[in-house]
Length: 373
Image 1 (cartoon, one colour):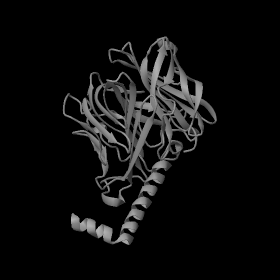
Image 2 (tube, rainbow, N blue to C red):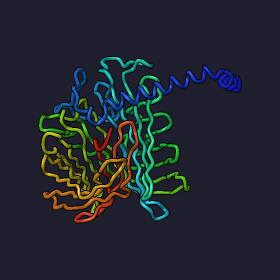
Image 3 (cartoon, one colour):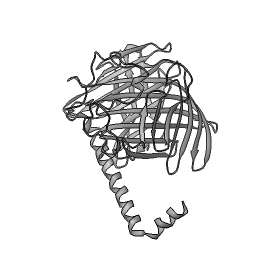
Image 4 (spheres, helix red, strand yellow):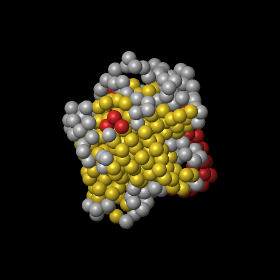
């Protein structure tokens, strides 16, 4: 090891060349990942697999990757309370994006068409921290396996710890940024929830769709590592799994998505997809306290911006009214920290919200396509 370090310092030209190559690779990965970003999700998906209503989700296989589809993600958020009496929120996401169709035997090594990207966020009432990791598939730096379940990029991990009947029942979660980190344990006390028709989730009047399910029942414990010190936390977590090849219509360029935990024990997933040529498309799933889920199609859910905050030079709606007349739900969402901006390759707003009104509680809000990507 000493000889290697000595050689590294002895040859500055070699060192500069290696660093330049790494920087070029990082830039390439960011560009390719960004090309598959929010607006790019409406581009043609020729050669990739497409979701089907006839597909029955199967486990544990569908907890793992689907390389014949263009994009998918493992996306976890948690609303947390600290032993210091303060509220916090965390996000952990692993994206897999294919730059070309991959059929048959997976391509190994640097020729793999799979790009992996990790996002991590930590929100406090006064600050928001974010970090990003990029990796090429095929070299072991990032990936996911179904059983025993594990998803990773570099030293970030979401992995089954072996308890329960499903691979997602108990998870260990970790991420580290330049100025924050977290280590959490998650234990599910409810079933998986399928959105749309048994996990076939329609996204537009034209029929674009994804396969989409969630585990919204995590009880979370662990530790946040902040510049001011460690904080022990407890709370509720929500894991989303989704994959597709063209989940948006060509005219859709962003979405507003919520996952809400109500004090009653009920839960709600809902989104609106904004369309620059027409009205937004909405979808929702009402999850009753007993675990039963009801899919609600376009128009059932109303998401209305109430107030905006200037964030990173853009006007971002950080206060919302959410209405679901079928469930006599009328609530307002207020951001814990209106400046919860994810400064990543394709930036977006994401953070915890407090819920007041007919069904008080707390949840998470994600908004994409605002400001420059």
